[in-house]
Amino acid sequence: MRKTRFDGTVTVITGAGSGIGRATALLTARRGARVVLTDLDGAGLAETVALLAADGLGTSVVHHEALDVTDADAVLAFAGRTHDLVGSVDVVMNVAGISTWGRIQDLGLEHWRRTVEVDLMGPIHVLHAFVPPMIAARRGGHVVNVSSAAGLFGLPLHAPYSAAKFGLRGVSEVLRFDLAPYDIGVTLVCPGAVATPLVGTVDIVGVDRTDPRVAQAIGRFEKHAVSPEKAAAAMVRAVEKGRHMAFTSGDIRFGWYGQRYVPVGYAAVMHALNKAARRTLRSVKPVG
Image (cartoon, rainbow, N blue to C red; front, side):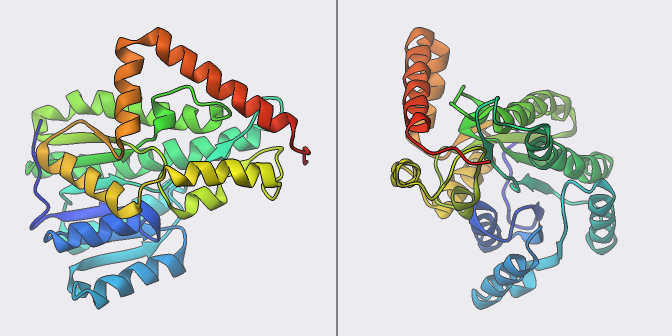
């Protein structure tokens, strides 16, 4: 697969207002990319732009704009303004996302729909707006889609999140081959625990997040979390080395190989995790 260096590229990054997206914006700009940034959170996005300026990289920001990636027309308009400034782009990095967990009996259709709209249709809107002009430009390039460990494994309570992240994994698998004739690489990023604001905002439907036992479980999760900077470095390294799959931590890589080569062991681990999740939920006062 194509190996892509960021120096001299125009790189679009969604979710750039915090977490992995912000760390990726800083890292790619330091590698010589001219960046186009967006996020739903306008204040967070402005802070990222200010951090780039403080790092002496203010001129690397070609364009930045707050928008909702679930709004296809807004994404197309954003792409149009970007193309007016720079022509086609070279790298598209879909980082923006939300997370919703819960038992199927607690989830409403609105939880499923919102998660799929943000985490699957959002990236599709971005790909639709930016990739065809990349093909037409005939310069090659790279697409990066951030999935999740929940796009690989049957983690407990993750059904809406996994619906979207498995879907994005499927899109990436197809585009990996569809875009190869145009010299456009596709990298799928599967983070495990990452210490981002997403951990603090994940919607656990039917569960009181302030319950001490829930807070304790989240604390255990955060102990295994890597920094956004480490996750961004793994992502950028995979693009530069032409890898289709990128893991941000060794435990997810280990699980991926275990799932493929030791399926009985993988199933046992998933059953154990599910049992632990059920035990925790039984001890927590339900809400809603």
